[in-house]
Each structure stands twice: as structure tokens, then as C-alpha cells.
Image 1: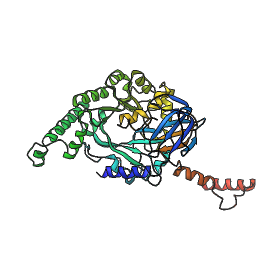
Image 2: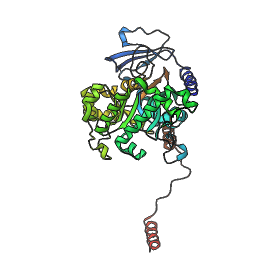
Image 3: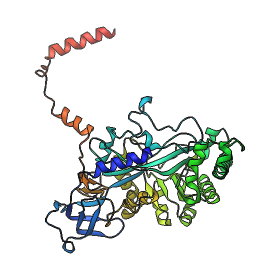
Length: 440
């Protein structure tokens, strides 16, 4: 209830200053459809997209604010599906890190949204990279908790919770085995028991609460939260890299009737046909192209390209907290490694929105969708391009941030005194001899 109340308040805040807007003349990448040269996007007063099409085919009412996008690129806001933004300020300062789910192994009831710092100075910095939406992830244990969809909207309050629970996050493989002190197979056996107990709890809540049932492998609150994933309900993000672990995740998901999403997937290209057949999305980063441990021996830069060619829904992520703004550079590197351009743009807009249950409202420029729109100076996947205008929920948001303010401050900082005089050759020689004497 608290999360829903926060959602309502934040949405009201974000929509309070919307206006009717017409973005005209730009190259419009709808993502879900055609690229429209010389297109127009109309934004209604309720923060939704009213119309998208060729400029000559759309009548713009006189009351609309006109934004000339001629020579510019217009895209949906970018969407990073796996981040810890707003959960950590300074990694070296423990008091500012709030990613952990706690000491337990099974933390299904933990909501990352409840740890979000909506006034974090880091949030406006990431908007400068064209990012309007993110998913924030809890960390810790084998079942890490529930991820949340966050909008980087607002000025005084920089983020709004759109949906407090969009996925359950679980870890398999050697890291999970190390956490439980067992093997890969031991992790799966433990998770099967947890799911069995979750189903038992749903059918026997009264008996359990009256202490008339057997002991269960996890707290009641976590078992109750886990039931959200039953019957392919809440998606489950499986953190896995090795091909064998991906196959195990697919088999476990099928047996438990849950909807899997693969995260990391360094060796996903090896099992791309199985992933494509099951229509399972893979969240990956093309820059993770060298193995950092034995689970990633098959890492390669064209992982995303091979997956997309096989028909796997590909999602690109930074997996970051403070460099989410580099999402477009991640996509650009995927294109360099063979991913086609349209798929790369889709992988940072519509695909993550769809996988996180927001595809009907976010991720593309279509009539009726939320007006998260970015106007770029040039190709958004080119490093030299810049965001010129950003709209979130139909409201034009500021691109100012703390880093920019500090840059401007110190660029123009006045001297507090005259510049130091240049030393004469005699003074320089004397100083050099003095330093040599001190060393001796």
C-alpha cells in the first residue's frame, strides 16, 4: 500500500506541469513501426502521445507549443532494465548503499523500490544520456527480491516509482552454490523445495499460522511473495552466464510454470535456439566480451547480434548505478559487433519495457503511450550526439545536473590573487639544489 501511495503521489507530481506540445520536422524513430522523415509527434495535456505521423498528415492546433526538430532525431526515452541507480550514492560508503536484501538466502518479499532515494544527485546525471526509465534491482542471497520500474522524472524529486514490483530476481550457478555452500544441482534442489513450500503455504495458510503444519524452508512473507511468479505471472530474472546454467534455468522455469528472463547470459549465444523457441528475453552487455571467471569462458562481443539473428528478444543494459547514461554507447558497441541498428534501438527502448510488463505504455512512440520522448542533435548511438530536449510523461525536464554545475562553476572560477611570478633561472637552480640537499 505504501508503494502504491508513493506511486500515486509521484505520478501527480510528474504530470502537474504538462502542456500540449507538437514536435515537428524531425526524423522520428517510432521503434514499433516505421522511421518517419519529417515527422510530427503530438503530446496531449495528460502526458500521453496523441498522434504520430508525417508532418503534412497531422493538423497541429494553434494552442500547441511548437518544438522545431528539423535536422534532429526523435526517439522514445531510453530504458535500462537492470540497474542499482538511486540505491547507492557512494560505493565506498556503506551507509549510502541500500542494494542488499539482507542476510537471508530467500528474500522474495524485499522490494527494491522501498530503498530508492528519489532525491539522489545521481539521477539527473543519468537523464543527460537520454534515459527516462530504469529497473532497479535488489542484491543479496539466492532469491534477491523484487525489482521496480522507476521513471527519472521530476525536478525537486528526481524519480517516481511507476511499478514497485516488475520482476523477481534469482541467482543460479556457482555464485549461488557458494552462497548456499552446495553445488549447482544443490541450488536447483533447494529452489524446488522453496517453490514446493510456497505452494504448500498458499494452500495451508491458516494451518501454518496456527502452527499446525510442517516447517517451511523460508519465511511466510517470502513464500507469499514468491507466489506472484506462479502461472507465469511476475517474471523471474535469472542471473546466469554459463550455457549449462541457462539451460537449467529454462528447465526449472518450465517445470515451475514461471516466466524467465536471462540476465548476464555471457554464453547465451551457445543456446540461442532454445532461448528463441521459448521466447525468453536476454539482458546482456556487449562490452562484457572477455571472461572474468569460469562461467564466462564463452563470452564474445557479438553475443547480442547472434541472439537477435536467432529470434531471441535482446535487451541491452549497463548493469550500472552511476553510468546508466552510457546505455546508448552500449547499444552503439552492439551495432559495431554486428547487431542491426533497429534491433539495437529496440533493445534499449521497447524490448525492456515489454519484458518488464510496460510495453503497452512505454518504449515506443505510438498513440496513447506515455510521452517519454528525446530529441537528439544527431544519431543517438553516436558518442558525439547530445540530448537537446527530453520529455518525461509529457513534461519537458531539465538536463541540468550536479556534474554540469560543478564544471561550469570551476570553468569560470575567478582567481583569488595575481598569478605566481615565473622563477628566474637563478631561482630555479637554487630551488633544485635545495631539493637535492633535502633528499640527501
